[in-house]
Length: 202
Image 1 (spheres, one colour):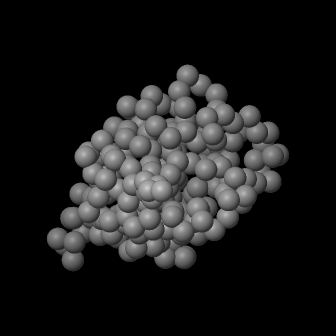
Image 2 (image 1 turned 90 degrees about the vertical axis):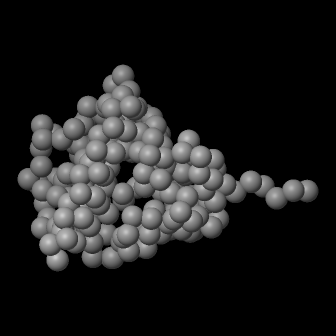
Image 3 (image 1 turned 90 degrees about the horizontal axis):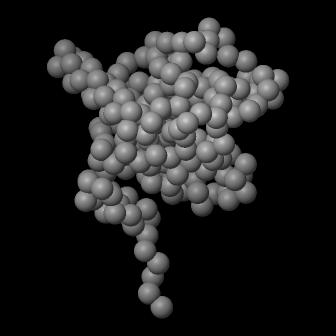
């Protein structure tokens, strides 16, 4: 019996091994394309388009930037906080709890490959990860109440009550995949430019 295939061919032509992912096989074009076509909330959201992980990532980075003193490296880590999902999809939290550790180990290997590809630490430092998670919870609150049918009370129970951020300030209406992909890639390139400038000035 042959071994099961553990790699995925990307549209860039790269072949990414899920068991031993190499940073050399990670391309921004594949990440932006994949995340723009992965639906948050298992697709159970209102609107003419799926609410994509790419759009969610843009919102989280925006909230993180507005609620923290942070540099371009930290903002890029916020933008890429769900990057492994371009390969493994967005598994909802209840199912992650059922699957357990196997999912997490694959996710961590992919996270490391993505981060190293772009000159970031293999894994987000704990304190920074917690701050990004706060921004993630704020985004999730508004996604839950505006798109996924949660009551405000339910959303507060799971994600907390957002402070200082309102729905009107967020790009919450679901975008077509091609638009989410374009905006994600543009934001990535802007942050890369800021990182290069900061290094040149250092």
